[in-house]
Length: 74
Image 1 (cartoon, rainbow, N blue to C red):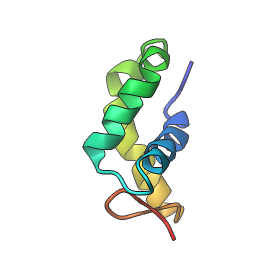
Image 2: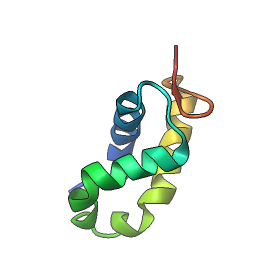
Image 3: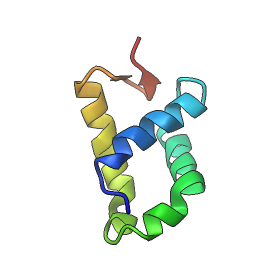
């Protein structure tokens, strides 16, 4: 069962899978395609994961792990 903190890893995985840069829609598609079963089994997270994905991206930017526009930090 996933929680919102797991989405930080999932967002970075999605960006990496896209070659180091991905728009919001592509990250959302990746999360849904690769982790739908896990999201569905995660209670309320299934209903909030798109908001929580944005929250995770904000934290990754603040931590210097992600640049603006969905890129991996240099």
